[in-house]
Every structure is written in structure tokens, then in C-alpha cells.
Amino acid sequence: MVKIQFIAYVVAMKKNIIVACVGMSVLALSVLLVGCDRQVSSDKSTTVSSDGTVKSTDKTVTKSADGTVTKTEDSKKTTPPDKP
Image 1 (tube, one colour):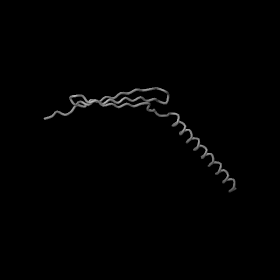
Image 2 (tube, rainbow, N blue to C red):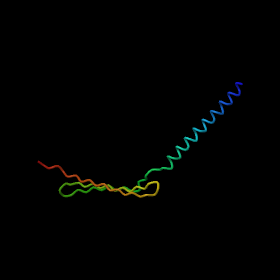
Image 3 (cartoon, one colour):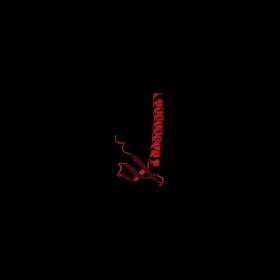
Image 4 (cartoon, rainbow, N blue to C red):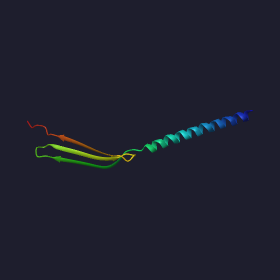
């Protein structure tokens, strides 16, 4: 009687382990298939004009997992503080 219960316990535990392994595998596979954006190129430039104004430009090109290419450009202009 005890041996039959032990076998049933072992079989139930094997099923739980198999279900857990399959669940973790599906979760890991879904994370790998989604992927991340990959940065293809990045360009940063800074120019200073004669009046002291600083203009910074950042250009970035990224490629997503599905092949879509995205170009972004960010510009900042900083003026110097007035002298007293």
C-alpha cells in the first residue's frame, strides 16, 4: 500500500516538474523572439558660434527586430548668460 502511494507521488511530482520546465521554456523563448532595438549609428556634434551660443545635435539610427529603421535627431541650443 505504501509503495503504491509513493509511486503515485513520484508520478505526480514528475508531472509538476515537466509542466514547470515547459512553462519556463515558453517564457524564455518568447523573450528571445521579441528582441531589442539595435543601434546602427550615432553621431554627436557641437558647434559654438561667435556670440557664444552652443548648438548640440545628436543623430541616432536604430533598427528594430522586424527590420524597421528609425532615425531620430535631437538638437539643443544653449545661449550664454548675459554679462553684467
